[in-house]
Image 1 (tube, helix red, strand yellow):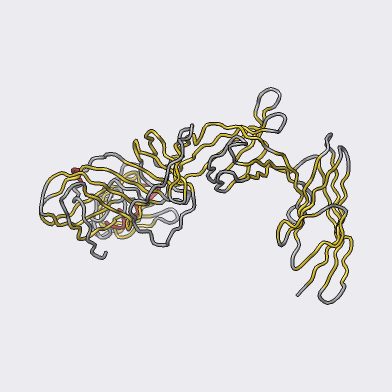
Image 2 (cartoon, rainbow, N blue to C red; image 1 turned 180 degrees about the vertical axis):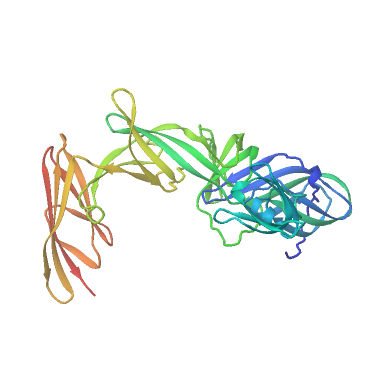
Length: 449
């Protein structure tokens, strides 16, 4: 590894003790960890190991800050992750003597010539008499190695070689990035019986598989999409912009650069291989509208049913909604909750509309046809479309029809008003009476280049 020079407190593994720790988690499989530790260094040139790091640490991002006037020069940093494993032990002990016991308690002693982990697995030993024996691994009950081979460690370790003019214990801040830790928002919405309002609660689900347990950590979540370079490097602290009022739920929300930062006002422990859920905000009630949309180019046979609401104070919300999954429930007559459907939302600022696809309407049937296709010229074609919508519900509804069209097009005739949603989509609003039929007919002229 290239020699690097960093100002820091030199580290001695025997003197490292856990201190304050802060974990900032992103949506993109990234965590930034900052630890405050009392670290001991010795005068002269020494090497030290630092073992309490996650297995998925980015060693290029490690940053040290010494609290105080002392300066230490770091000459080298090495990240070692060749962990103890049976296959590694066999590999390190090739041409060396080991002892094996089979399931019957029989002892085999000899020089290890080979080991195979594939298939049933075998170990090849040469005894002192010169005899060579091949033993099936499935018959081995115990293996005895004289010592831990050089180069193998029990957990990922950072090694530093440093030069110091002083000795003693100093306060030090260590920060680094790690993969294997991410978070997402999980929302639960309870639709009321008249389907006019939605009780929405939010949870932050933090998934830690970084290879380290973070004990009693200050927990921060960043909502937003940061740019990631292929090679990660450590960065200095970012500036925090003006804070908003604290949220009523478990986290306090602030504006952070061009993102949003959620800070838990108490410490939390993130165990390795654990998903922890913490309340993101207290339940809020918002007014919603139910909608039916028919998109024949996606699904020609079914009509989507969805819910939409505006994320505003007037509607009952008005808080930044991080990206995540929304589950929609409704209570049955006996109080039991029935899952209506679920959808994902993207990062949604205040005062923006949220559209949720819940499922497909059971009692609305749809049919899409091309009645006629006419070539007017080499560059112009006319299409006659028909959409039939059959409402088997006991109340009148309105179905939005969204049809995809390509090229340069125009609607030349239609029995309902239309709206150009975008360059490739035309939209119609079709009212249908209870147990009625709505018939949309329109003609499109397409100009080919």
